[in-house]
Image (cartoon, rainbow, N blue to C red; front, side):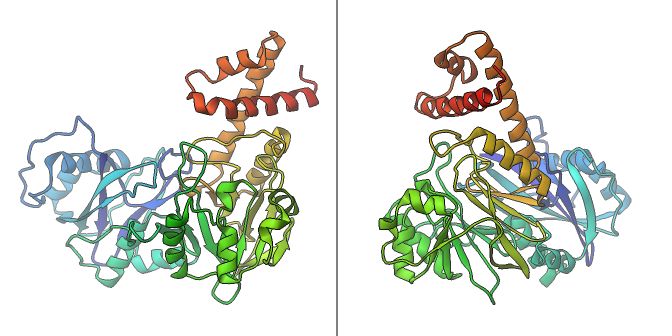
Length: 443
């Protein structure tokens, strides 16, 4: 596991946070404290000044010095010398849970400053940075304006209670992996549950969500634990929040497995598109109230904003997406993934509709994108990159078709080195591209 370090700059009443650029590959668009990876080149020589926590590994502290210099253009050693840095404390370690593809052992180091220094921020990685009170930043989070990992929220809550806090903080995700599934709330009001599911590799979990304000219906979205043992863990986590209705975004089994059992147990209606209902079949929903949803339907409210249904075919003809009217987030389902890639193919897939759905989300320009597999991401950069990548693939297929290459030859050229078990899915996607190409008379 990689190691990293975060600089928690504070004054007597303020804390310094940054917002990471939306185009970064790791935690794009997240509010965080500055920092980065510990490199093999970071020195193991102990630092002489007494202000440094002597029990911490020297390479971690040297990485801290380097990252602060690179990201904020601030010299910590000079700050100690001139009296701007008053104290440096080890305030804990957070280990990224195993469900996240970007795993780090991250050391948090508090740096108490004499005053709020105006840093010269590296805009290649940081959209902006600000000194603010923990209370103000937490209020922004509670208003849905902050995307952050759990340790960042724990930091803010800790320093809101005690701005002078200087001892290690418990940052482990508060769940028992033996009896519960993980639950995080990177965007306030969007509870993300992560059960193990029968999904497409390399992902092994399908995100399930609970959305809806307390004074309206709460929706449990895509409940799909892989077996009865995982179901028991899933329901224990769900019961801590509660829900009123179930929504299935589309008919692929990793999005609705056990939804029947859950609906019957809780006497909950199940909602979906007409296409999804027809594909799964009425027998599956026997004894359950079914509500068919379509474009524009308002389901509930999230932080006071109406949450509407968006039809986003392409990956699946009946796929539904959700978003509040202020577009603070867009639950995109399987339009994109931050783990692996999206398969387009079979009778339910349509590459032209997939392109159109991607373009539509880009035009809507939501602040954050919520996928069914992987972490929430800031902005539409990932959607734009996905569309560009698909277009490049399609252009490549056009040239190969003009050269008279067979389907198998195209597969061999485009997907060199792909695992054998994934080749049938790659073939489906190529076939979907070819159908679109022929419909547009590009060949």
